[in-house]
Amino acid sequence: MSDFHTDFWGYYISAIALAGIFWCGWLLMSQRRIKSAPADASGAVADTGHVWDEDLRELNNPLPRWWMWMYLLTCIFSVGYLLLYPGLGKFQGWLGWSSTGALVEQQARLREQVQPVYARFENMDIPAIASDAQGQEIGQRLFLNNCAQCHGSDARGSKGFPNLADGDWLYGSSPETIYETIAKGRHGVMPPFSEQLDARAIADVAQYVRSLSGLAADPIKAARGRSDFRSTCAACHGVDGKGNQMLGAPNLTDGVWLYGSSAATIAEAITKGRDNQMPAHEHLFTPQQIRLLTAYVWGLTRPGETPR
Ligand code: HEC
Ligand code: HEC
Image (tube, rainbow, N blue to C red):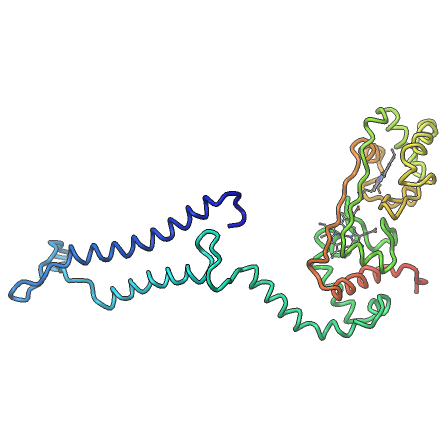
């Protein structure tokens, strides 16, 4: 009911529900009084005049008593149900039950049940969990169920969704940073520059950006684009184009692309800007679960550790 801005629909639905129940009661009473003609002196019951299959007559007997009671009891049950449980507009019901409350309770019970499994990882650091077979297994399952729809089941991402298995990081690779990314989410924003730069200048900067990672670029345009890059882009991407992990501004020199390396794709980023969001997950997981996810993501490349 909280989805509506006014109380009107609550009253509307309550009125229909209650009127329906009372109408059923009224129907029973009215039919009982009018239709049940008494048997005549000889004990024969009057019939309704309906005849089927030549000799099957419909008698006008009163409704059986057990049937009437069942009918009445269902009406009373409905009223009782609507008093105990939510069903009438904003009225919560005397029991205070709600589907959200039931879900929260079930989740709490489930957490309590799995607590012993997670307790084992409580005193392990992230690299230790990443080396633990059970830790990796749980982390991978959590990842497949909650992260794979964006980052891919192999964590290799796709256009706009970063590859988590390539050792290249927008925000940083330390366990603390990865934990924060998962818990709080990230929002990478690059403003559009179509006001400051005209189409020619944008094409020039795009060529310069391509030259930063050694891609084929028009040397004259790239040389012209260099000064615009320094004045307009360096604030976030750095004078050398190596990016800034505080802002999530990608390194433009490493040959790893979030959106693509074609001149057109780069020009599109400059013209329209980019706005990309990783949702926060802290309300979905316990801190222990986020630690196992962190260990799984960290373990994909083991940054800061000498490769084995
Ligand atoms: C709705 C899509 C979506 C889901 C679900 C999602 N992510 Fe992301 N994730 C993104 C996007 C988009 C970015 C890049 C954000 C940016 O560009 O600022 C990102 C960034 C990240 C980064 C930072 C990568 C870097 O290079 O620094 C990590 C780590 C990460 N996600 C892990 C996860 C994990 C673990 C989960 C599951 C709990 C998850 N993500 C679920 C969309 C998603
Ligand atoms: C205010 C900071 C900021 C400025 C200024 C800025 N960028 Fe960005 N840029 C970002 C961020 C943040 C991203 C990542 C957006 C995302 O996560 O989707 C980005 C992404 C990009 C990408 C996509 C990289 C890829 O891997 O696909 C390119 C190309 C780019 N910027 C070029 C430029 C150029 C050229 C300029 C100057 C005209 C510029 N940026 C100015 C913050 C900035």
